[in-house]
Length: 229
Image 1 (spheres, rainbow, N blue to C red):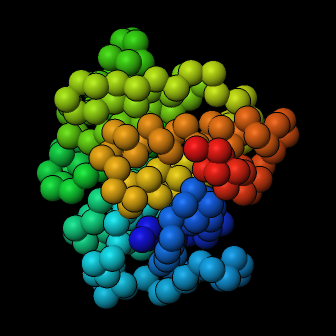
Image 2 (cartoon, rainbow, N blue to C red; image 1 turned 60 degrees about the horizontal axis):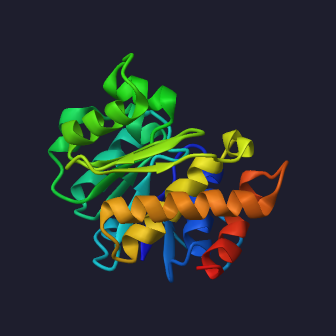
């Protein structure tokens, strides 16, 4: 089961939830103020009780979360819930490396370049070195997104995903990636394998979508990408 926490921009969390479903998660619940299709998506009010569901195998927070007081309360609750985490978007802007390091659950971070610089600082080091250092510093798997996505584990292992579609810079595609990785993590893969599988599915879905796709198309294409395995 994948839990996705909604925030001020509900559409981003909707995309992450849809992506988790299309990537193979058997049960996805969206916690927060959101409504509409698909009807297979379970929608519930955000609450500590909902977060306490022991069936949650991965919790995705950050897409469209916002950075206001409500966002901080929801993030604090998510970190305390004890579920494996995929931290994306605004969640990365509200945290620091030491706080991430203190978590005792598996954690995957999915920053793009701007979020990475905000969280870890700027550097002239190469992307692999920076991703490795960030993973070692936080104890989390780091998916440093871009045309040459680098996936690094705290023990120094690295996976590379070059040659991504130019259209993956389209708004919302990062939300789709977070959901896909959440599905892989909830399926029981270790964090590095879950991150790599989610990145591969994301890239394959983009290839299948062709040019000029939008994030909604990409989320739908995860179904055929998953079926090709």
